[in-house]
Length: 251
Image 1 (cartoon, rainbow, N blue to C red):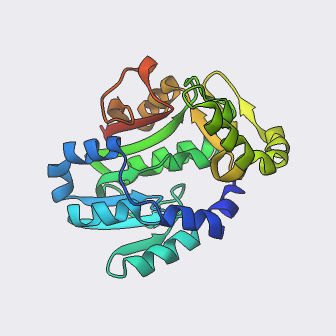
Image 2 (cartoon, rainbow, N blue to C red; image 1 turned 45 degrees about the vertical axis):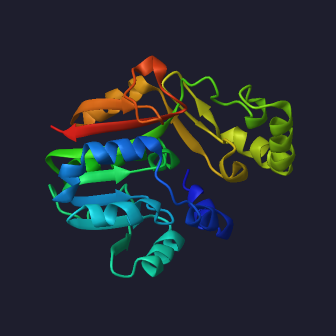
Image 3 (spheres, one colour; image 1 turned 90 degrees about the vertical axis):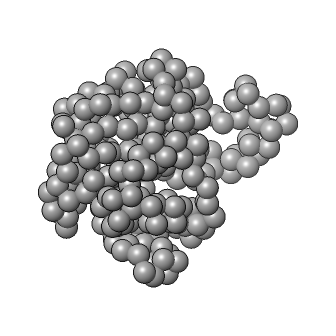
């Protein structure tokens, strides 16, 4: 999983994230829901990428800090937002921040899914440590139990034949990379680490069952766990989309 940083520092991926501008519907819903909390909060934004959430959240809170473990993303955002606190940090080690320092922690766009199982637990522990009691943690993750899990994107039955054919043509030059990376995959009932099609099969991605998410968050000390669809509607475990959006609180 440590090789993922090579992809996130690549010019192609940095450009892709730099062009992302809009919040997802679930993000809009949650940020609206916690607008009063954000207004007076110290907020940590993890995995800021090209600054998509920085642009929206920094004026909505009292104290904003954005971090990313890609030096290229950090340099990009420091240039785009020169008056905003942007730091090069790894979510697995937040020792630069005090315990109980933040009211709200955001980790968007499934950023937590690009480390392995043990490092994922480190992140949850660190986020819990730096949150104030009652503080909010908002994150998203890939859903192991979704019907599209581990299928080729050109097998999507929701798309027409021509769209799937174009997808196949676009990704076919990278199928050897997929074959090579598949040797490092892990698939269990609770989670999987697979080489999906993101950024032309250049990443190893963690997929979690909803049940594992609840168990990990609970064991890390979080409570009031809620799931949301991409649309922003609350959802039960069996109705989750391919991405699961979660809010929880530090007990």
